[in-house]
Length: 579
Image (cartoon, rainbow, N blue to C red; front, side):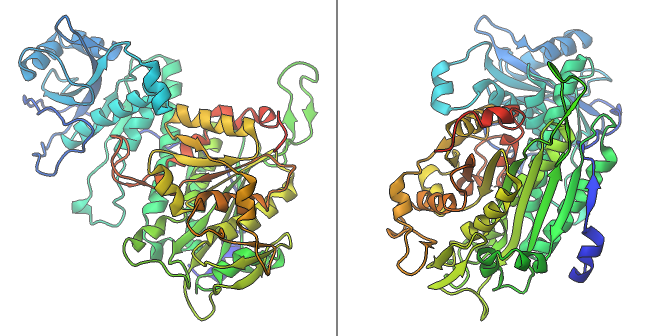
């Protein structure tokens, strides 16, 4: 699409968002009697396993360990066993050599129980009620919810491998987490493969007899997983197919598609405002422009506004039925470098292809915004995404150059590969013009944080204790762990420049690189705003550590924003003053 057509086609769009729709009812098929091998815990199915070409529906049920012998079913497992006249228990005992036990994280696939249950995946859940407080402390995560996600993914993948088209899922006591795990577990980027090499994704539904409350929770979880999968899709797409302009187009399409699926009860909408190069120049975003000028692709500055500037209805107490002034927005900022070569300070060629995902922060906040709207959260949200490429050329910024940010601060650019903070600096300056309740920026910012934390957690730096705690709590509940990192004054001293206001890298080289990057961003926040910076470089890519995230781009920071503790209760974010 021609860039000159962008202002006309995408100048101002207002849509309502919702979760992806569910497919139709399951189709019955002939039963095939076969017992599948037990799955190896924590590993994907290998390609040499035979693919059973089956049609019909499958059911995922859970099974607890029982030292007294025989399986202990979940609520859904008991129902399926009853509906099959005890065949579920009988076939499981045959498949497990009489023990009826399935190791935690493993699955057993059973066929031909009856016409309704042609395939059943039995997933091992470990000992019932066995929760270790020490494990929760050491892992810094909601162990129960994480276990449900893993179990749901294992079961869904088992049935997908068997060729099942429609899957009924066990809620495992947490329907939201079950939806997340199963939908995330079935995701695989295959948009560029030929049809014969593309594996069909089964439809997912919660067990039909589940009560309405569980159905609602399932819908929430499915919305969250769909949003995270959208972030993963953006991050996986090759950079020639995900330029700044194409990123804007992809987000616009996602918002429009979500609009067509939205329930009438969700009255909040997303306004999409793509800002072109001329606007960026008019705002004097010199730091952002210095990164973009090395590429032939024009930069874009994408704004997503949800419930922005709307009067808020009182819901209780005094003033019932009256309107109050529009609440200050929560601002999310995402780094959107759609490909990062490092510029003149060029990166090594090994693994440079992964830098197509250097817009991971942008992908996560865009997807989170769509999910917030689809869930109808009662908040005012502004999402800001500066988009460009970092390329070497005769026009590129050079080491030693000095550029001027939107707030007038001068920056000595000693390393052109420390470019993400330059984009974020101008975006944070612009965000403050909206008097936000809080600002959270997300970026694949430093390799230093990957060295420090690996893929175990993203790092959070903040000037607000309450905001930091809310984000960390949300991370525990959603499985997207955050680890609080320091913003000591000494890191600010390390970015002092001899010829400009600040330097874009620390004076001690790689030492505390993630901390000096955060200290750099703090210079553009001021002292009056609650702010948090999330460095997600270490968790950008999943290495198959969890069954529900296969190897590839993860999009993990997206779910963290959907927790009500960090989004809905905006008033509590401001309960303490920024440090």
